Amino acid sequence: MLEKKQKRTYHIDTLLTKAEYDVISLKADNYGIKKSQFTRKVSLGYPLPPCRADQRAVQVLISLHYDLNKLGNLFKMFIHSQNKSYEKIETVASEIQETSKKILSVSEDLL
Image (cartoon, rainbow, N blue to C red; front, top):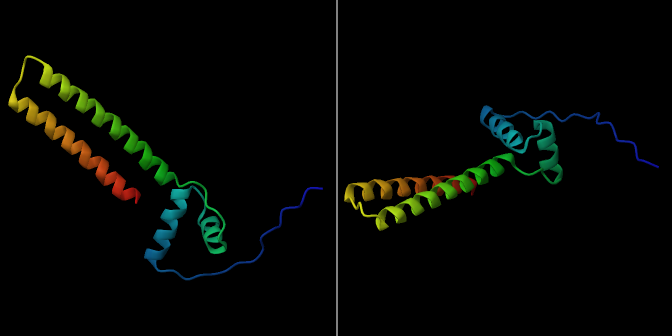
């Protein structure tokens, strides 16, 4: 016999500062659930769904990784080509460095 889902009928009112409310709202949104669900799960120690913010950050990291690999390959091709201009090498090196900084920034946000 299937168990009947219990109806939730009790309320807990909690006063929050604007900053506390904003943090809870942001975290609930990152997990893709309502604030009440987030608060209940955290308070009772229930597992949270996968964090959507982490998934987005990982997707960005993967994209940046591929971009960095492409730049590296283009840099190698350029070095091996006949047209060796130091200005162009500096530009490519600069682009690779900027992309690397983006990856580092996103990685730090993940932690």
